[in-house]
Image (cartoon, rainbow over all chains, first blue to last red; front, side, top):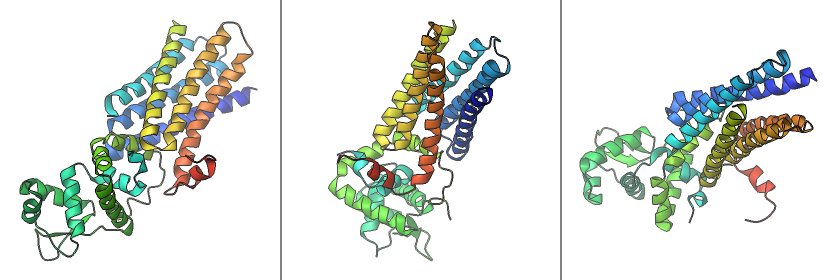
Length: 88
Length: 133
Length: 99
């Protein structure tokens, strides 16, 4: 059960991180700010997933929930800002 | 009607290299006279635009591998797409522009597709089709 | 406070999904469809979390499965992007109905 949850959340974290890296690479190539914003979003989501592992698996019952929500809000807000600001 | 109906190669060509209708007209002018070599002045006269901006356009498109300088001359250019794929895209563009002018022009003016495309392209792990040279 | 933050994430995910939907319509690139679906699943995840908060513990596994699915969809999008290449064979074999 523990290992299953671990694996799932780490997969999510790894996916986000991969996206972040790919987008950052794209930003380095093309200098389109949209890629930077979305890359930051995925960094945030990776952090969010890691926090989730820590919160639910490593120290259950600890109150990381606000931090988790906050990291999620910041990430998606960055993405939406990028989409609004730079996709036209 | 929709830009999505244009061939993929044509859409890519526009997204990557065509920023204005002027540039499009220059490219197609040279494409339609493959045997002739053109200077900025002769292009400008033909299209009735400024020779100064034509010079820049010619240089840009040479850099992009769409045109090439005539050997032994600094100011003369020809249409010479550097790969068969690019040549196909240019001829596709010529067809599209004669048959569906509005669609092509709209596509040029809706360049956000370009930014969006870089987003999707960022997730492409290998890029063997564009940077081989 | 936490519910408010979670709700914000829900709304922002919905908006991001809408953007990707629009990109999909514009470019006809399936990649964006996957992204749109993924962000909406993240939004759904938030709804399910709220349901579990309201006392229905059955949903907690489902909620995290949905979250997992959201990230798997992003992986699928990336794999698909790299597999399809210049041709769109997969698209034509999937679509049963003539469009």
